[in-house]
Image 1 (tube, helix red, strand yellow):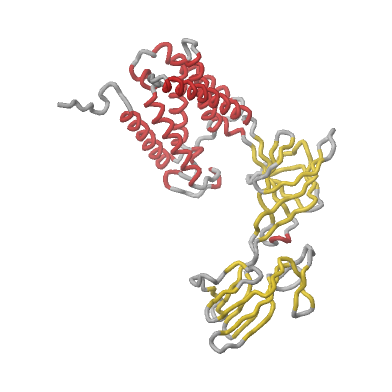
Image 2: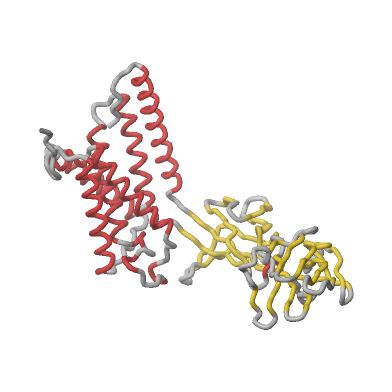
Length: 415
């Protein structure tokens, strides 16, 4: 007869680990919902002081209560796996659910849109830091190569968790609106805070590359576009032939950049105020009549044009942006002026700040003269790199050592 271990019967293992993690998750969500208390994460130097004091507390716990079963179990692999999975679940929720600043957040069940300032994040973070800290103190002595590698690995994880949590309050973000031929040196937060940067930004040029406009057949009686027709809203390309409603439409000419010539035609142009234009041949399959004409997206120089046939308009939609970027001159006192191009997901680094391209005047579209940049400074970023390096060093050694043990047919126990 097999004896089945009941939960909480020693020795504890993964069952207890996942139960505790689920309990922290449940308690955190309840506290979020019923207290609506938001934590203001400490800033430098208090976050560092609190982190060091917490490490000191863990050392005291290890020295005076290290033989207690609970403390021993908290420094075990099953406990660590449960804590890591809980924290990763919270971080995953923060990535999937759009997060908002506490002061501007709309009410959401369990405060899921302000998790970084919530009970759930705080409890899961402190639980993980506790587990990793106790594991490190359990394995740091004796000073063998294997124990040092293990300590490096988990020390790197501890640093990454700390910087993701308690140190994240020191990350600064400021928006920088700047017009072409304008020089600025200040940034702003949505709350109205202002900062003066140790550099100036001069916007030389802001540009947007567009996707081709889409071909649309619009019911003139309702101004509706029948999107159930898979060919309606096709991207316009020269040579395109589509059947929409009772029309066969061929794109005979397509100019991504054109200006109006007279009232009836368009010519290619690189003018900054140009728009997209296409020359169409439209066959009405009900009666065989063929119609030809130009359609355009319009621009500040000319109005959008369309072709009307009975109760239908054949037109092009407003082109959507493909990518946008700013050409800027950075002026730093005591240094030569330098010209950079800032594009989406391609920031530049200046004097400890990263400058990102985040927006423009959407009402003006490709004709916007306004560029919106974001300046981000994370003073803890070097510590993030340190954590990653320690994690990689420890993991690499343990992986290499584990392969050696496996090759000899030994027991590969890493925890």
